[in-house]
Length: 79
Image (cartoon, rainbow, N blue to C red):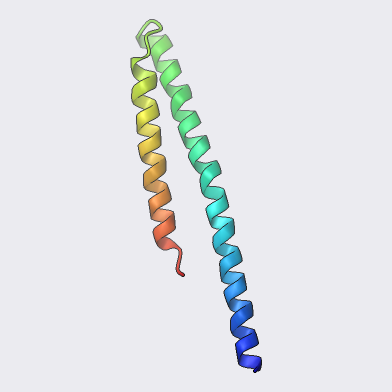
């Protein structure tokens, strides 16, 4: 009986840890994409005279990098 209580507590701790990790993923994605958008805006103003070529490229690159990071983190989570 005591063994099943210990297993329940361990499972709850593991689930809580996984929820915390997954919660941070959204914030991480948002910050990564935002920084790449800012980089794209700066590059457009500096080199492209206000056209939106670099902002599009950097946004797509930021999305790709953030998705890659998310997939790596999700694969590390043990269920």
